[in-house]
Amino acid sequence: MTRDSQTDTAAAQQAAAQPTPANDQETLQGGADPAAAGNDALEQALKAAQTELDALKDQFLRAKAEAENVRRRAEEEGAKARKFAVESMAQELLPVKDSLEAALADSSGSIDALKKGVELTLSQLRGAFERSRIQELNPAAGERFDPTRHQAIASVPSQQPANTVVSVLQKGYLLAERTLRPALVTVAAAQSGESADAGSPN
Image (cartoon, rainbow, N blue to C red; front, side, top):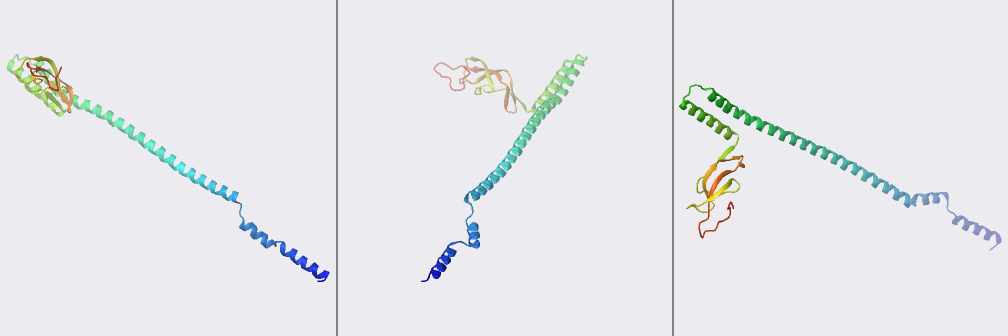
């Protein structure tokens, strides 16, 4: 091989080893920076998390406001209910007061008229109690002593079973099934050899 041929061959090999501009562009396009890609993904994740956090915060504030509104409405309704309950009871008692004043103003001196007036007034009061859901507690003799509705004043000797009502000293009253005032009663004491069972006033 001549010197010229050797020179041409070396030049061709050197030219083949050098990348062309097109090859350089392809290398840049195909080899994206991994760090830049990771930053983009992280930024997108942060944006999504912030959006979700904002939505949850808005839901929390709405729920809190609704709960506050419910609490306020409940308080207002409770206050109105108590006010109207007192007003209703007062309206029921007005006729009773009118009857009492009429009885005091009666100058006839008739015992029968006075008795009828008292009976009428008592009837009005009972009606007012009934409409206001107030019930009498007037246990019969022999009824089992109930510590939630009765108050024992004394235990007395009796032929009745122990811890049963013997007599009522003062009536009690219920308000909507709740004891407003217990009935004052005497109860049968345990007889000799008889043990007091559950519900004993002692």
